[in-house]
Amino acid sequence: MTKVLLLSKNHMIESNLQNILQRVNAEFYCSSSLFYQAKEQAQVIQYFSLVIVCDTISNVELTQYIKGIKSCGIPIFRMGNKKQINATEFSWLDDDIDYWIEPGDSDSEIIDKIARASFYKPQPGRPSKEEGFTGQNYSNFINRLSKRELQLLVYLYEANGETISRELLCQKMWKTEMSHAGFSNLSAIAKRLKLKMLAAGIDTEGMGSSWGQGYFLQAPFLSFLKNNDFDKHFSAISTHVEAPHEETT
Image (cartoon, rainbow, N blue to C red):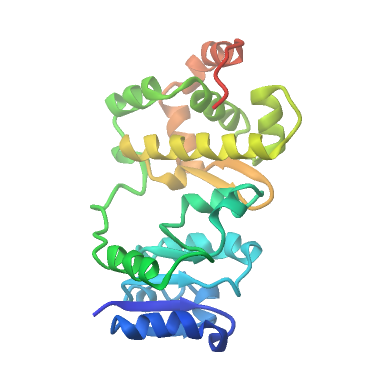
């Protein structure tokens, strides 16, 4: 049986969603406290097949707690308009959301999404630390980066663990004022960089993000780069990524 956790501030207004879950004979539980206590109650949340973050929870709040929910290892649904959110400063949330329940979705579409998520198989455990990240993987990782991905990594490395705002990153990378298009491009580049980190055996937590602020490198990954002579290549890489080219994303 599919077990669904609804994270909502008001279970009374989620009646339509609850009716859909009843139609497919899903077991569901509605809570607001588990949203705020995800890290402390991971074992409770892991009991469920999937979690749906309802739209009574704001994007501002979601940015503060989504990492805790994500760490529980089950698919995350979000009620809301994906296209609208991707045009705002909250666009990076899409990186951590597995499925969207949008206003125009029919009951059958929602049922299909829940069915797909119910067969979700967590990927095999990946190393959460960089100790298993070998020199060969490091070389492959660096060589596979696009100019823009490498450029982002260089700027974050140069910040030495401090957060760089998305506005400043957009100015550095495109030499233009901040715009929604720039934010969207930056979010896409950061997402691809994270995927390549995963492929090389680096946990995505190696690169962090701060809501309303920007991106930074976590201490373990930053130390790994320093210990693997990234400094030696830094000047050459900096010159390379600063060279003008036509690539925009």
